[in-house]
Length: 225
Image (cartoon, rainbow, N blue to C red; front, side, top):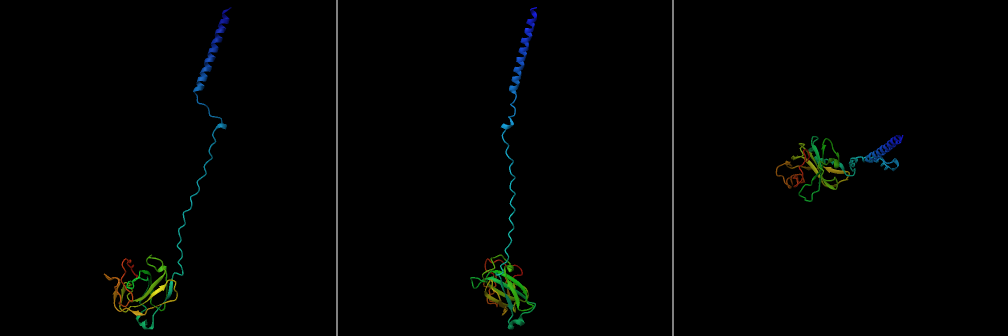
């Protein structure tokens, strides 16, 4: 029976061809697939998590104004000489004013401080400091001129005939025990708000000081002489 070995040999060759074809296809399929993930030991190390940002600095504290210098004051008392006692009434309004000393003897210096007091009894103690400044036009320091007035109508912009006043031409800030006397009498009515009042307006009218505001000086606020 020579036919059987031939048949077996045919089937063996066919099985070999099929096996080789399967291996080839498998290799082709594998070649088209992406490479697998690298081993863990070869993977790049992950960066450590970044530290949180530092907290924002607190906002700067608000500046606290320095307390007033106790030495930057003028203290003293307002007195009435016997010759003027009958001319100063308890109903009068006392205006105490501090001004810069003007370089021009015919001009009134700029207003620095003002205080309103009562004429009910004398002597009247007073204290002037930066707290009495109506404008921020410099520090309360140096040498100043002090004036005081017993005003009959209570209007600082009018000086009435018969008003009693006094002045000290030079007082240094820090002075203590200052004695300011109401020792002069207003000779004529005078208005500080009159139209066209110049630097020399009011001179020789019983005040001893000019009443016109120098050029460029700010207008006085209501209620201030």
